[in-house]
Length: 583
Ligand code: B3M
Ligand code: ZN
Image (cartoon, rainbow, N blue to C red; front, side, top):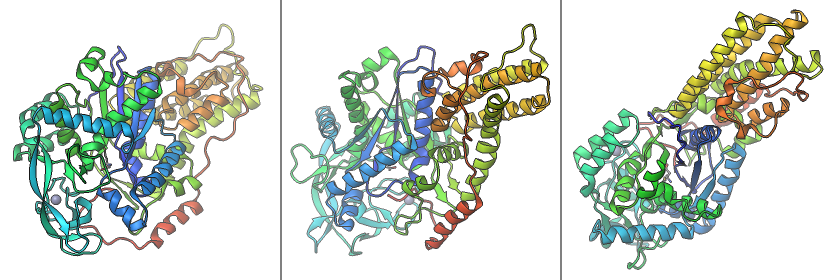
């Protein structure tokens, strides 16, 4: 990804993939999209970029209907329940959405039908009789997630009938080998039904040139999407025989396929954000091509690697088909996460619920841990409690917390809580020249890495800078230096603490705000100016507040308990294929 935020401060729309609300939020959900999107958004805010961060709950589709059936709830009752829970969890995690929507909202229903009508007028959708799985006993159609079977391409077992989570290919009814109903294991029939198809095949060359020349995405992702185009795109069935979803105009008892209305949810969320802020038309600067071009606006979709097909092909083709709408600019794709080396399993509850995590651990710890261990790439990762403990204790506490706390307590106890004066006539020594140079260089480097969404590397560069601050403090040993030297050291260090608060705000916003308040600085670190992290604006005699330790250690007992808890759930058998977080 080569995105660089330009000096003109054009608007940016950041989205994170919409959450299926058919279960509680767990640590698998937040690694690839929610946390990185929030870190990036917070960075853009500090840079003064007019950024809008939206997401929402993805409430339609058979996954939802099937789970509601299993839970004995109506689809509506179930999505309400998990939407509310997820929203509460998001707030506790510090996810700073400008708007969080729901695809069942009226705005999304209207926008979906409107875009459908445009595509129909332009001839990009057409009617077709398709085969749909049908249960002769229940006398109803069983689309998508009702049905499981073997992928005809890569032969992964237990794939749903709409697409393969292992190889990413999409299916039509009849493609699966050995299809069976996921509820009662019966073999379904195939029955005729009239649907609308979207002419994806008509966009092959437009999509390849979009992928080659426009979409900012990592090359390995670009290449495999181009390969899919080469193999031939198939038209996409956008209708399902269900009653929960966005109604298809002119068809009774049918709704749009969830992947038709879900990405349109990005537009609907932007419209609702605009409405909420009293700027009704402000959504157009992102989504209407002519408007976006005037402003140089950009769209950045954070997604997991299992939904590349939908975001790099289907979604841009749909937008191109309307002629007036703008396609996404940047597609940061991240991989899946295992927990203690094992696949997350919804049925076995082999997961860590955000709700449970937050009972014991601060939100900043998981934000820190994930940011440090998640590259901007579709590679998979692992949430490992021992590794978590090690990263928290050595880096967050031992490095950042240590420096901040030592400096603040030193000022508090030895200088009566006032940032000391650099004595008149004293010149900064070679050590100060060197450390200030390092600061300026690091701020530039971190700026560049954040702007390229290389968030793990940005954090590593900040930790390296913090390490240098520690070394400087240790080397100057103000506890045994004379007052003049100690003053020079502490004046610099007070300012370095401020720099760290700003640089770390995107990753650990709660702790950064605490540092800001201990420093007794005005306003909030969330509104600070990123570039000012290279400056030393805190003046002598500035009073700080009494500091408390910023972080507490991740203790062995607590970590062992977490590990035992997971081990007590029957460990899933070794996987024969890799899957994403179960949905
Ligand atoms: N609801 C979740 C997923 O497949 C799906 C994303 C929709 S984004 C428009 O990861
Ligand atoms: Zn497959």
